[in-house]
Length: 104
Figure 1 (cartoon, rainbow, N blue to C red):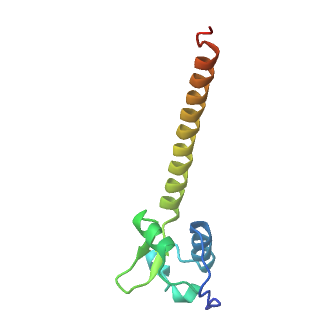
Figure 2 (cartoon, helix red, strand yellow):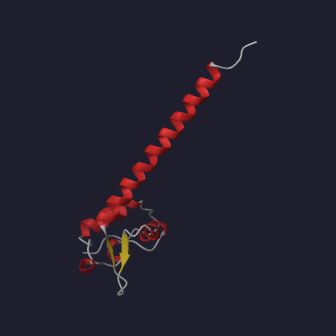
């Protein structure tokens, strides 16, 4: 089943992953071409490849590794949590410094 062409349409990572899932391309044996999904190589497919989520076979077909995608998603959530904690601590330190400043 060939998807409608999406030339000029930008997809995010989740959308691309869902497209591969819907097509059943979740193993090397079930790999498909980007054009079958109406996709072409882009920064999203390159990023997913760099993250080792989207794999290209020797025949030039693609498939997604869902377990790796889940690891990437969890890692991203962990990083956000640490950034949130750091910002909160910085805000508390500034607030404390403002309340404890010497007054003339």
